[in-house]
Length: 172
Image (cartoon, rainbow, N blue to C red):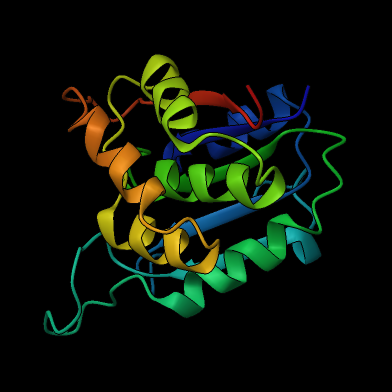
């Protein structure tokens, strides 16, 4: 079974080694420096510079965009799924859970959005997927509002302490 490992930035090295991952998506603010774990191949590391905000026009912050979602979808469609994919952001609460849900639907578009959202809530009680990423993912994947409705239905996640890692199976 293929899965996506979602985690905060400070857990990427440990989890990449533990799960023998060789591919990773980073959703972090522009200029936020970190070292790519050595087990992650440079050519299989997608970096998407964005802040965790829900709307554009917030000073120098970079809002998630349709282009970010397009790059994410294109990248995950080339993932060979032989090992888990790491998706991380700063805390593992908002941007990376949103990206994981989008990735799961991009890979297996026959999934029911409500079942996927329920699976996310089960494995990640703390997840509060970034609404802007979900909106663009819904549109890019032709979900006609169903993904946005499903994520809204699970509500805001529980408070997290910064060590919020989980595995999301990409199919039910």
